[in-house]
Length: 209
Ligand code: 3PG
Image (tube, rainbow, N blue to C red; front, side, top):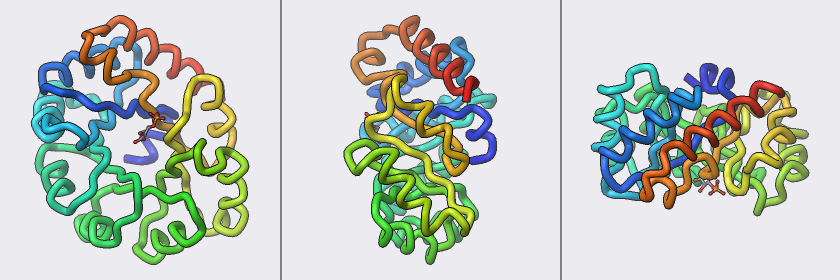
């Protein structure tokens, strides 16, 4: 799954308030040529949205974001998510995902986080919060001692059109993620065309890497 996301290069991170908005959002992303979404468990609607979108749009790589508990992980898997990510590296949640061979990228931003993730047996990591924890300079510093063990880092947090290509230029970065493509107010305001335009722009930029 993470290999497929590398081909796309960019993952919209979203929070939706209703499954109906989730379905319209998926449509808007597809219209922009971006068949992927990370639906975060920051709203009550996350599980139902993943379930509805997995059924309606099997062509979309649906992920669950902000997965903080084993219960949420199970809800995401049961609803049809194909991958999940978390802002931090919770050993209990990561171990549960590994036990189910479910693609899970825990969040890291320090060498100790990276080593904890390595010990748990995951190699695709979310570098979060990317910009606030030192950006590309910090990421390059982390790649120094850990690049040779085959780790991949997916930066999110402060990524936008102006800096995404800097990260994507690194071979250890399969994709970047962020909310800029479909901000919560765009979704709640039903600005589907704007979301489609943002998705199209992001896809074009990622393709230029
Ligand atoms: C995430 O969970 O990946 C971040 O909240 C995204 O951060 P952003 O809003 O800066 O894109």
